[in-house]
Image 1 (cartoon, helix red, strand yellow):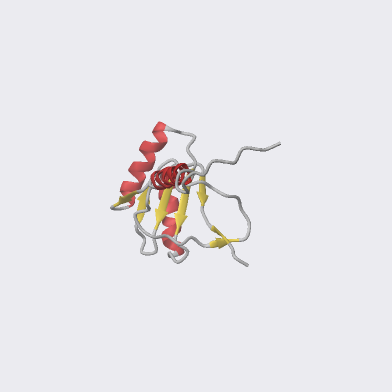
Image 2 (cartoon, rainbow, N blue to C red):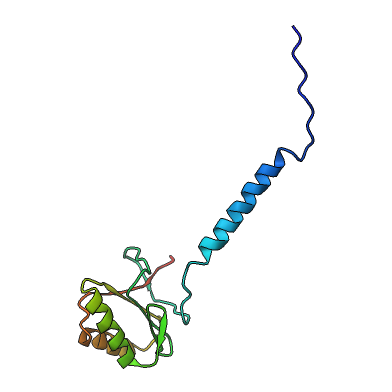
Length: 135
């Protein structure tokens, strides 16, 4: 019994769909990677040994090394702007859990001052974000 010989096709023909898929994946990852919001300034939080992973969705307050503040990605001019922003945000969502991401080198007096201002703004739940310690 003779089996028919497979037909010879040019080399490039079966590779073209693979190239198309690779380019579609590349475009997909480029677009989805652009959806993250950049932080207004760099913050290196302190390290902690225990804790759980927190997402940076909403209610994030950044406290920079120099004392600069940002709330939900928007830089703030002073502490009063932070209080106004937090009050208006808590009026919209009273169950909002605020997350304070402070630089590890910020003065503790500044950190406590910001926490007092947040309490005055009506914040009842506040998480201090840290990085996982590398042993």
